[in-house]
Length: 458
Image (cartoon, rainbow, N blue to C red):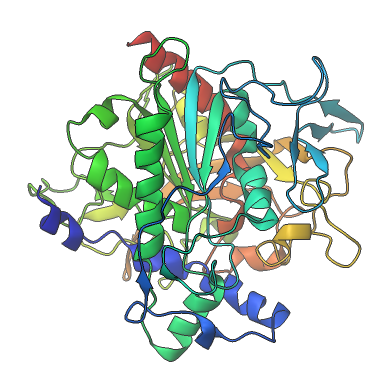
């Protein structure tokens, strides 16, 4: 498919970015001195490509907050010391260890193993967290500035992958929360293309300068990790650079595109070729119907979590889960089902890791720290570790349900009554802000197994 055809293919970008609207309204309340009018529209933007990639985390970078040297091993800390990440502002180290509570109430600490020259790479694109444009004037090539908010969401969603991969996390000029809210409230357009441009340029930088292994001098396998606006930008990147027989496609271990609307054919009728309603033409979902089936690689894992009451489908106007074309549905892949080699719609336990106040540098005034806006309504535990592991609390099942509004497809998460805000069961966003966390243990284990499988096929 040529470039113009790709550009017109529906990618559900508007619906993906719209997930931040509800969060934006919270942000407006917390930042009442600022207005949405300060955000640039698509028509007024004169942003140009950045002169160079702004990396939040890059292995080997000086004072890498993700604490990895060029090989992916710890950059700082004595041998055998707990592995930590370091905040930019305070300079404080935070642990990735987890506290686990047993059925009897007893607690134990699970140490996070320090990475040891992992063989794979992870390219993570974080979700919408900037309240206002970063930089404020998105003109020319003025670069964005890394912040502790970026690092906090990276720690919450992606840091635990660092045990099995080198972490590459670019800072990009995203459409901010206030811009999205202002666009919805006024009916004006919002520029979502700048971030996609920055992410693609960051990928090119990674591909040309860092994907080759410094020891073996061979190309490395890579996982693409995204959420919300980050998923939208990775969808664009995958369409342009992977959804065909390319050298980059050969290095793709898998792409985890959470909190977005990746649309596929529902199988009820033959798909046209090309299929403009499908997000991808060639990239396929990860499927493993039996434990004896090899772990799939080069494929897509995607879902949006909902804690719907009594298993009801998300509302017809839900931001996620709803198809936009007949004969199609939104992709749901349960990572727990992939690990078990079970049916795609099996109900299975989820290995959840929720962030703690400590991980986010929470205070008495702002207990959810750097993510107080994004995690508004969540009561995080005050534990000495970075995470609380809920290995025996939640279950997940991919469900598909047709109704008069179309077809809904979502990851039904049950058992989280004491974990999620009460509003989660009726919110049009569902469990959007914790899509990664409800199955983080499963996702990390899946990534490790897919990396091993990819390596074995080389």
